[in-house]
Length: 448
Ligand SMILES: Nc1ncnc2c1ncn2[C@@H]1O[C@H](COP(=O)(O)OP(=O)(O)OP(=O)(O)O)[C@@H](O)[C@H]1O
Ligand SMILES: C[C@@](O)(CCOP(=O)(O)O)CC(=O)O
Image 1: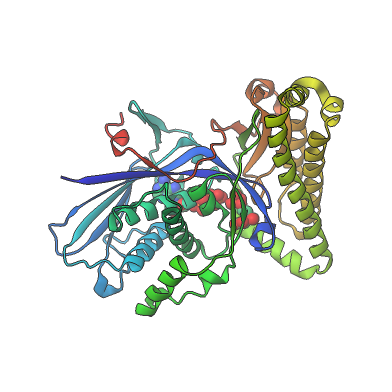
Image 2 (image 1 turned 180 degrees about the vertical axis):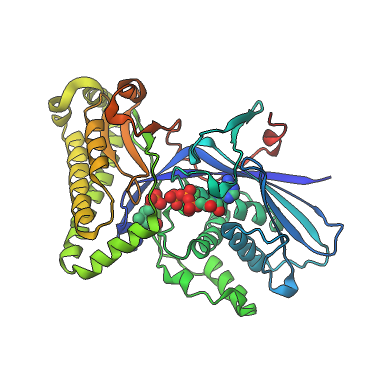
């Protein structure tokens, strides 16, 4: 009998802390989304004389990556047909190397990937569903379908890691913190290596732990690992890093206050995060100490924003009448009545000043973090009933916008037919604070 298990992990929106979060001293606020990446894993004894891992992504023109993995070649995944996916390869390499499984009995491991529709542009796709799930099917490969920037590669690295860990550690329980930490650490190493070591890791942390206040680990923890071909020493250092080293990162579970929700708009043109990051770092280094002052000011604003959301959470719990009045003000009370509530005024002021600083960095660095078309769009959003704040999430640019709105706000109907919002497709997703979960593998069968 084939044993199957399934796992899913959420996408993310980085609401505050973009760029600063690359430095371990700064905090960020990351909301996990209802759009999830899924992996269904099964293993059987292989009839061949080797162990093979095959990952399929049937939604994307039946994409598939198949690797032979052997201990005598240092667990380095060898593509069967030359087709490669860096995120899958580094996940396989690190999980096998961590467990060093004794492969005298050869295994055939199959992982099926499914991604919820929010991750990619839906143009030309067709839905397939069963009683439990629905996924969009595309006629092109994954690399040819435009992404929306919700962190598909982090979701992929996290579910492939969880799937493989479950093969070598059958008692894996994602409700146990220790097991989540194991998956997080391995996925973080894999994602960082595949991605070219540029990210802060907030996306992998959110894929594993859900909505979080995140402060990163020292990037050297991963970059100081030896080369993959270093033999035994890589495995020893990886195991020490994953199991023993204190990563000194902060992962504090958070959630948006009751009555508020996240609305994401896809802006259809897309930006390359790595290029933006390179320009901002160049600007930062060339403008010290003034750039440090800008970062410190941004950090104060970010922290005030995060703290004020915490305050709103307690107002919602302790003073529901006042909280309901606040939500009414956002829902249509107009500017003055919103600003009459100090907490709401603080949140809005923080976001305005954060945006102002990012416009300054945009102008001086040439990195289009909040280019003027996005400024116009965000400003237009602020006039809609039910909108508390509007930002470009993450690295900013032309990827997306994120609004915090009331639960009642109907953004779609307010913006329909209004040319100011022509570039935006409102994504059918919301915040969903939960991180990696185990799913029922039968829920992915017979999609039609
Ligand atoms: N469903 C999937 N199946 C297989 N591979 C996938 C899938 N989704 C994403 N990937 C891999 O992740 C890559 C995209 O990762 P990338 O980091 O560029 O985007 P992202 O993580 O979605 O967005 P961002 O980094 O802007 O948040 C794809 O080229 C592919 O290699
Ligand atoms: C610019 C940066 O701080 C955020 C990038 O966010 P996103 O991938 O654009 O959602 C980089 C990072 O933290 O990895």
